Length: 167
Image (tube, rainbow, N blue to C red; front, side, top):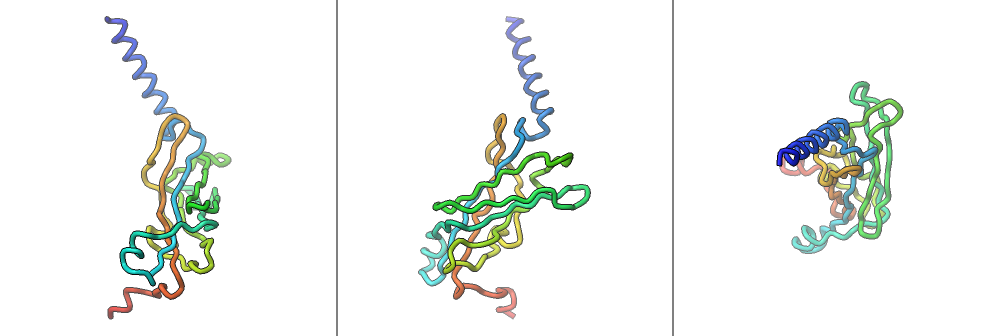
């Protein structure tokens, strides 16, 4: 019985030490940022506009990571969405001698893959950028963050500045 307790304590200590050595990345050499790009059509009724956005294949989403000490760009990666509007950008935790922190990265929608639905919105920070905050999946060797969903819309749905329209 005592050897079981000692074995369990040893395993817990080993797990804690392994987690501390991983530095929050669960031993992974890279993390993945994934999400979707959708098209909202304001010419439809409200329910269709709000709940039935269509995936936009071929849209470009970029990830830019900065050195937290100098503020310089140390990583830039991008991905095109698939037929379901899904993107996946893999980011290394280390570039040269610089250790990257996911919270120092900016994810943003760069271009829509649909010419008819090409106005980028800032919903969820699509145009201005969004910083990953919490991993949705973290296990040994794998860490993943979600971003978005990001939206594009039709030209006739574009409003220059909603704040100024109610002055």
